[in-house]
Length: 469
Image 1 (cartoon, rainbow, N blue to C red):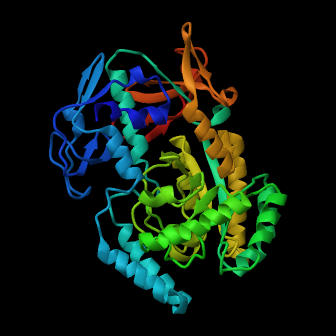
Image 2 (image 1 turned 135 degrees about the vertical axis):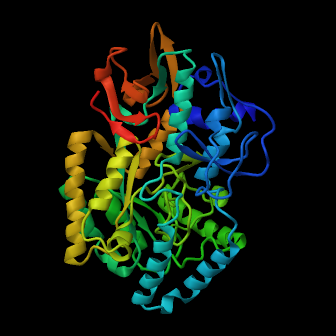
Image 3 (image 1 turned 30 degrees about the horizontal axis):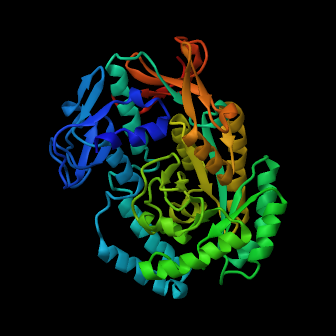
């Protein structure tokens, strides 16, 4: 456990391992529960304090049991375990009755009127929105944990700044990917229209296509999408809501999904209705998955990975959904504006995360919904110019994150250089405390606050305080 305590932190920041001398003290309980580490909500076992069953309870602060020394930081919990528990949604209770209800719903869904389906969805969502965790509309618990850990490193006084490999290429403050899930024949017929809208602001998107049952033009759609410079990925097998119903069924369907992936050279996958079981992802022969929301209050399956950054599960890269889907915004929440999207974009950008969207060609056919999407595209185009957001396809993000994971920081005199494939686009960044706040700056004149990049993360609350210093 000791050697694993800093693993997730090092993978996130890509800083020298000696900068994170983490150690877990005492015998960590096998029973897991909620606690906090400064502003960050956590879930794992612990060797100290009280573990709560619910995050709504008063939570023990593990910072009180943390010991800081120059060459060692001792915790009562394993930080890597906390990150894994959130990313893999292991904090969720084993709710078999909810799984049974969800399975029953999908058995009857084909015969339920649209009005009945939406009424059920609104009822479920209204209850979940009252839950204290994961935090709606964006949950950054994993990022808050890593930021709190970085603060502890800097508080030891061993170093004034911690060098790391910046999250995105070319110094971009955040990344954005647009994706379109094509669910019905209506959506398949409007893919060209959607590509026209995207091209009007210079954005390329990924289209997730269903290979069986839903429409009979799968191969033609793959070719049409690629011919215009967009990306094609797989969207479930037949989108009937049963993909993850049981392991045996999943194994059979995964074999078919893998065959389609090989035949059409498709590297990405998203399950229908964002269904998932991350413990089974290794059965999918793809490079990246896009089925896990940051916070899943709006999807049939509850939970969420509590993160706005890509992360690896074995050799699979997860590109989490971090904003509300168009269907949720239009038909469940009933919003007639893009204000929620704007709020989510700003929060994710401030934490240098991945801003990811799902917009369906099936749901922007009507004038009002199409107009809202055009408003979003216009806002994104303006944000891109002002905030240096990297617009990228999922495949490009997958390549970058894999390259970044293999890069190394090399000391060169008093500075650092980055070595490895793709390093020509990478930048050295530095983390330090200034006025009690964690700040990042890209490489430049050391000690000059004018080079600080992006958000200033407040020590006391973990909330964005601004970037004017």
